[in-house]
Structures are given as C-alpha cells and as structure tokens.
Amino acid sequence: MRRGAEKTADLMVIFGITGDLARKMTFRSLYRLERKGLLDCPIIGVASDEMTVEQLVQRASDSIKETGEDFDQKVFARFAARLSYISGDVTKDDLYDDLTAAVKKFKRPLYYLEMPPSLFGPIAEQLGKAGLLEDALVAVEKPFGHDLTSARELNTRLHKVLREDQLLRVDHFLGKEPVIELEYLRFANVAFAELWDRKSVSCIQITMAEDFDVSDRGKFYDSVGALRDVVQNHLLQVLALVTMDPPAGAGADELRDKKTDVFKAIQAADPEHYVRGQYAGYTDVPGVAADSTTETFVALRLEIDNWRWSGVPIFLRAGKSLAVRATEVRLFLRRTPKLAFLPELTRAEPNQIVLRIDPDPGLRLAITARDDGTWRPVNLDTSFSTPLGEPLTPYERLFRGALTGDHSLFARQDSVEETWRIVQPLLDNPPPVHSYKPGSWGPTEADALIRGHQSWHKPWLEKAP
Ligand SMILES: NC(=O)C1=CN([C@@H]2O[C@H](COP(=O)(O)OP(=O)(O)OC[C@H]3O[C@@H](n4cnc5c(N)ncnc54)[C@H](OP(=O)(O)O)[C@@H]3O)[C@@H](O)[C@H]2O)C=CC1
Ligand SMILES: O=C1O[C@H](COP(=O)(O)O)[C@@H](O)[C@H](O)[C@H]1O
Image 1 (tube, rainbow, N blue to C red):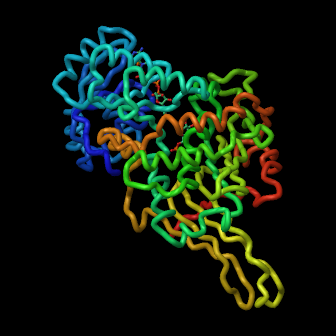
Image 2: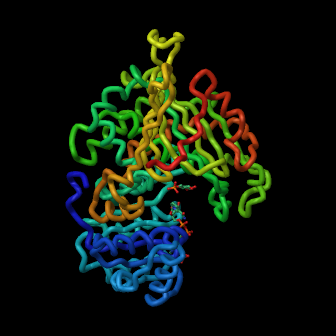
Image 3: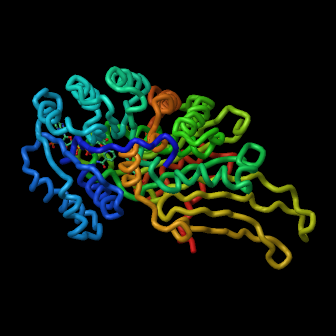
C-alpha cells in the first residue's frame, strides 16, 4: 500500500449487487478477502430487485460456487453475516431515505458503483443530495465516458458533489500483480533501469489476445468495440507504466503524475496507423447488429515524443477469437554490431524483455549464448508465482485498495482524459473493418502496419520453470 492510504472505510455499499459483475467477480473476491482476514466492515447491497437478505446470501453462495472457488462454510458464514440489502430505484429519492437510515452510524462509507455507466452521475447526485458523501469514497466501474467529451462531462458532473480525492476510477488491469510489478522491476533493478530507453530499445509491442468470442455480451460489446473496451483503458495504462519516468515519492499522486506526463507526450493516434478487424461470425451473436462494423480486433502504432522514447515505435494489438489467450509487453533491444570473433561475421538476434501479464505472470529475457563456436538464442524465464507466492487477484486488490483509499490503484481524471485524447482520432475516423478467421491472429492488414520493424511475435506461452 502506498503512503496516503491510511483511512479505511467502515462500510461498503455495492450498487448493482444483482448484476453480472457481482455474480462473476464481486462475491468471490470479497469472500477471498474474508478468508485472508482482509475484510472487516459490513456490506450493503443495492439493486432494484425485491429480495430478502436470505435470498441475497443464497445468491452470494451460488455465485461463489459457480466460479469454482474452494468453498469453506465457516468463512462464508463470516462473510454472509456482513451482508444486508436495500432494494429500490437508484434514480428515486425513497431509496436514499432507506440508505440514510442504514449509513448514518458509519463515518467513512465506500460506495462502489457496479451499475450501468449512465447511472454514475445520477447516483452520485442523489448521494450528495441526501448528505451521504461527506467523508465517503465513491468507486465507479469502467467505462469512464465513451469519448473525450463524455468523459469530461461525467467528470464535471461527479465533481459537483465529489472531490477528486473521493473518486476511484476502476481499471482492473491496475490491480494485476505483474502490472504493479512493472514499477519495481524497472526502477529497483539497475539492469533494467539503465537500458529502458531509446538508446537500447528499438521497438515495443503490447499484445492482449483472447481466444474466446464476445459470448453473451453482444449487446454491450457491439456499442463499444475493442478500442474502447481494452485499449483506451487497460493497454494504455500498462503502456504508461512501461514508459513513465520514476515517481518522485511514495504517494499515489506522485505515481499518477508520472503516468500523466508520459500520456501527454504521446501524440494523438493516426488513423493511417490503425487496423480494425472483426471475426467471421460476430454478426450472428445475439445482441449484435446484422450490419455491425464494430471491431473485435485492433492493431495500432503510437509514438512518444520525449527524450526517453522519441523514435521508438510502439505497437499495440488486442482482439477476441484469436489463436491464444495471452497478454504481454515485449521490448526489443537494439541489434549488436557484427561479431568479429565468430567464424562468420554476423550479428546476434536482438535481445528481448518480455513481461507476461496473463496467464502465469512472469519475465523472459531472450539472450544470445555460445553454441559450439557460434551463437544461439536462449530464453531465461521466471514465473513470478514461484518466488513471490500467490498474489491477490485483481478484484481482491481493487476492493482492498478502495476500502483503504489507495488511489494508486485507480485512474486519475487527467490520465483518463489523456487516453481519450490519444484514441479520439481513431474513433472519429475509423478505417474499414477487415474480416478474420476465428482462431487466427487477426486480419493480415495488421502485418502491414508493422512492416519494417520487428514482426508481431507470437506471445510467450510456455510455462516458466
Ligand atoms: N460484467 C462484467 O464482466 C464487467 C462489468 N463491468 C462494469 O460493471 C458495471 C456493471 O456491469 P454489469 O454487472 O455487467 O451490469 P448488469 O446490467 O448485469 O447489472 C447492473 C446492476 O445495476 C442494477 N440496476 C440497474 N438499474 C437500476 C436502477 N435504476 N435502480 C437500481 N438498480 C439498478 C441492476 O439491478 P436489477 O437487476 O435489480 O435492476 C444490477 O444489479 C458496468 O459499468 C460494467 O461496464 C466491468 C468489468 C467487467
Ligand atoms: O475489461 C475487460 O477485460 C476483459 C479481460 O480481462 P482479463 O483480466 O480477463 O484479461 C475483457 O475480456 C473484456 O472484454 C473487457 O470488458
């Protein structure tokens, strides 16, 4: 936990407790925190369904079991004892009368909004009107806006009733262990710190490949697409941690200042360097328009115009229904000069540093070693789970971080606006969408985007020892 995260919430109110996210993630993550002794406040669920608390407890138990989590009845009983429920329409005053009665004895509530994003503003306003925000924190799920203008509007609306230090903008990638690890890896190791710039790095690739389709999320996904779903938020947040300068202190804002600085140095993306794809069969998914041109794959090129990174091309790609599930950051180091001591004058392959985010977080160093008078590539692989033990899952960490007010795990408004600024030209002038075969690596046009640089590398998939 970073400095400044000392005030712990004494109540958690979850708006949207009957929703899909609660079913898949929330109950399970809170239950796991309970098991680890990291949960110590009551929890009030809010939704419009009429339901008894016993029914909510049953829902929680079913949801946890559905995820395949080890289920310990004693731990669950402790967790269930924290739960209560308030039903009502979040846009109506009545609900806030009930909420006021339930919240009034607590000093520092955390309101966690797992709601349709159009309700973030109305809920915050209702909480403000009921006088429930004084020393409160409010966490809002993604997406924060759907473009630069709407992100600014939402922010203005929330700031009418909340200070920035009360707002937590959720991006679950910021709760992933290897993403947090980036700051330590880069700045606590001279071996990396000294070569992490344009003098040593020739190109950066970030891949987020998913081997599954949009499944039952057709209606949601068709209005969003891959660029908004994972690039504007998750991948740009990762890119900032890969490329920022070292924070000057231990506070959350010192970290977030550095991320914003690097975002500011990223030029707005150029539609000429942007490829969109859609997997064959996407338009048959329930909820997807028959003539949809929403992208399920994107590949793009960015540049950072600062002293550390000028001239280093950055390639991002993300997609559904690709060949594998893997998320990684890959840095290519510059080529060696010709090696005169080898029998044939030759250059070694460029070294690579690969940070694997999913699955099985780890680090690969691709180096060159001697092989009977010549050289061969060798991979030095480490799995983070072996030396570091099992980390908190992203949502466990985010809930814990929200409860303790650890802002370093959440996105600040300036960085959210910067990320929308960067992708805005791609939203305004999207190129045509190219079809690709499910199980492939996306449309072949993505290869043309990267021509002249290191080609797209297949993600590192082998298990690390
Ligand atoms: N689902 C997922 O995998 C992920 C979701 N998210 C984000 O989490 C948020 C919630 O998503 P998700 O759970 O999928 O959404 P759902 O539509 O499944 O759930 C929405 C919740 O909001 C409640 N609700 C909606 N309108 C009202 C209202 N007027 N008054 C009271 N309650 C209301 C619903 O209660 P009721 O049914 O009783 O009306 C339900 O509990 C979104 O911002 C989404 O982008 C983020 C990452 C992943
Ligand atoms: O936010 C989202 O993220 C998931 C991928 O998250 P991961 O932690 O499972 O890698 C993505 O599938 C989904 O479309 C998107 O909304």
